[in-house]
Image (cartoon, rainbow over the protein chains, first blue to last red):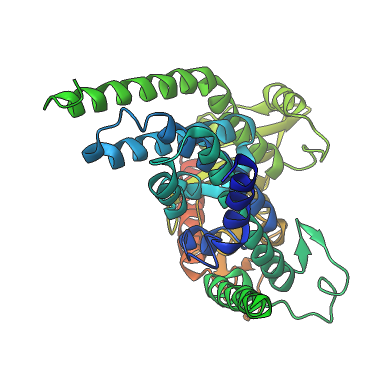
Length: 208
Length: 209
């Protein structure tokens, strides 16, 4: 297999065929927590793209030296390192967002996708493809989160990115408070997973 | 060397030292900014609750300048509140309040007119309540309710009531779905106001009607 098809496979896997959220059902904790406002979700996604691609690449760089029995400790250390950097950058240059996201930035450390990609891919592949794999897995996570966040904010608050939307912010739309409350996240995640899996199954049947 | 029993220990030690030193260096580099941001959030809250002090377009520098030049530091006569004076007379107080919220401490400022009874506004500069629920206390929809409310001389200076209740002159509506935050916030506000009023009445009797 040459490099080009390899990269293409990694990209399609991360975004669709092996999508971390609706296929592997990983990183659900943060999917539920940060998707009630679109802006918070965007920042969270950027933070995850940064953390995931760089920490997986770092794990991969060190894979020939790291003793197998302590590899998970090293992975956690590296992930923690990048997350603290993100946290500090937000605190210093975007304090409002830092207070909005509260503890969730720090909780990227426990995001299963990050550890999962380091373990499943970074440990056995060279840094280049690992970076790509991390990057597109994070994007696969991000686009699902953004879909959920957009619907939740629209139905729950009548706004998108804080801007009032026609009709939904008007008097005829009774805001669904439950959509911005935690249960709304469960409903949306369930519905989104259902829809995307159905699309995928239909695709598979068509190709047969 | 990789087969030696001590290798993992040394490896872990070296890696930890390497990554920690970068983090320490970076946090040193940003610590001034982080601290300044935190203090600026406090200054912004003070200016928000004082009448006609904050313009929406104020830059961070402008904000800091206003705070330094116009706001009086707390002293015994103000009962620990920051003051705004015009022509030598105090026109408003800004009283810092703080206490435990649902998840983490809530810190804010409450503004009171010179009559020591009418609320001019409330603002929060530190909280970690649930986003979309308890955290709504920082939103204008909640904070604007306080403007013009009057501190009651009853046991509870201000009441945060259920969203369906009818409001009196000392009442505001709670945030829907955030009962815990609202209850705790009510206690924080009332404790601070009671303490402030009793300190004021001890140091001087003026302004009491």
